Image 1 (spheres, rainbow, N blue to C red):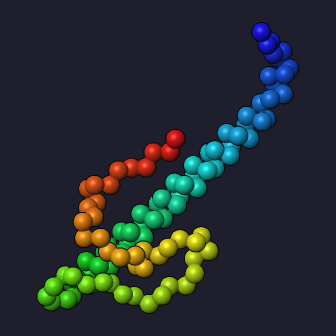
Image 2 (cartoon, rainbow, N blue to C red):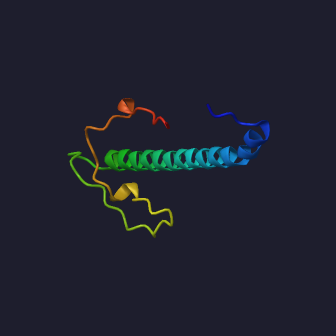
Image 3 (cartoon, rainbow, N blue to C red):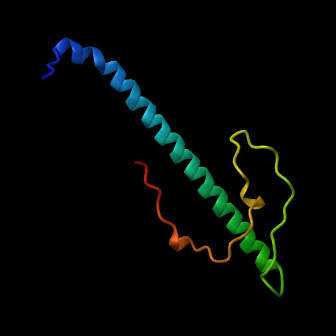
Amino acid sequence: MYMCTLMQIYNRIPVYESFLNFFVMQELELHNSNQFLRAKIAENERAQQHHMSLMPGSSDYELVTPHQPFDSRSYVHTNELQPDNDYSCQDQTPLRLV
């Protein structure tokens, strides 16, 4: 049976703290990325609704906007994605970070 002295346990605390800090920072980064993407999706949906309200006739079209400058975070801009007519905001499930 392995017995740890109090000093051995005390010496391991900085290692555990660094692991904990790393995972907390990863979770914050994922949360911020998720918030950014949700904001971009909402912005795109508002633009589509506004554009659809201005256009008479059919709603089967592709929203085309000028190419946006490169985003240093390497995200795909939402206006470059094909619209999904089956998408519903009520069907969203929150992301769970494990």
